[in-house]
Image 1 (cartoon, rainbow, N blue to C red):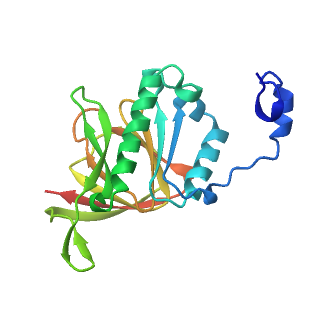
Image 2 (tube, one colour):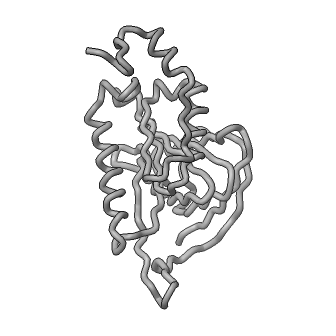
Image 3 (tube, helix red, strand yellow):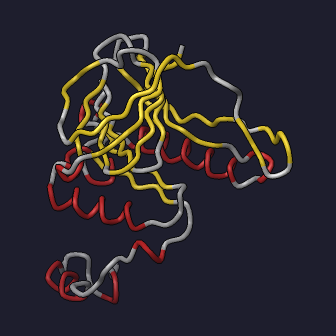
Length: 221
């Protein structure tokens, strides 16, 4: 069985030479996009650079980047050792894509981080229903808050809990947040996180590219 361009899959040198000039241009991708990679592959610095370049270049706001954890056997290329986890991530994402494709189901989406029954933090995608109060204006339900503060930092922070329930609105820069189960997500300007893991081990925060990021913290009552 021949591979790409009539070359045998075993002809590694030929495959490399044939694809040497290939370049992926993320700016030409306009559809929703899911990038899924095993933790082992993502440990490579060049892989991290390529992933960031890809995600930053995508124009569709419906884009998601997931690193599957070594602790669940999902660390290698194509998540070979835990295909069921890969399928779960893919189909959960597709459920959200198809739901949002229906105009009446359009919602504002945020990410929630909370503490599971085992004391470890978990991610959850949440949609906020919006109601049209008058033509051209849609609002979510009013939530009571007790304070607001602004953050600027370029540091990394080991496991810590959220001090209280709070929204985090990222203004610029970027961070990677890792849960207690080793699942990682990236947050960039415009993303909103609902931090509710006020118990357990909490989560890790790493500043991307070692450049300062800024955010707004809104404490909920």
